[in-house]
Length: 134
Image (tube, rainbow, N blue to C red; front, side, top):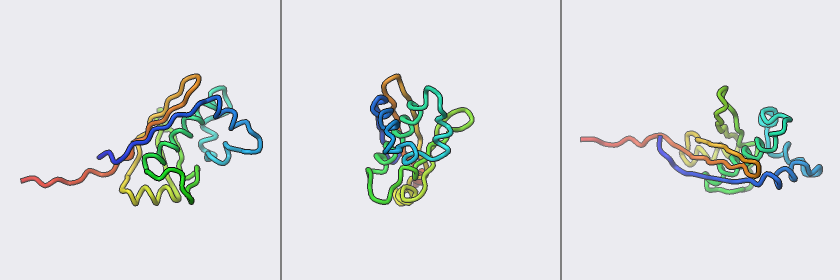
């Protein structure tokens, strides 16, 4: 596996919580899949969990080098959790197309949050390049 790109993003929890609570925006339904919303739950840590996932989506776009472009949906990037809690990224739609075009085979992701911030680091990886040996 070889590293192709890296993206990182940080989200201020107070501002993110305000956006989630804004009734006209319906940010949660626009930005997250049903699976992501179910995983975040309704508990006290919901805002932190969603903010970390939002940061990961932003970090994927940074790793792709595209930023936000026409045709990309927030739901094209989905964060899933393994039984042990380890996060992973699944892409679809336009993000999947760009990912394939750039030779990215998968993403490594790390999420973290404190009482005030959520952060995500995403590394885009591709297959090893065969080397010639004598």
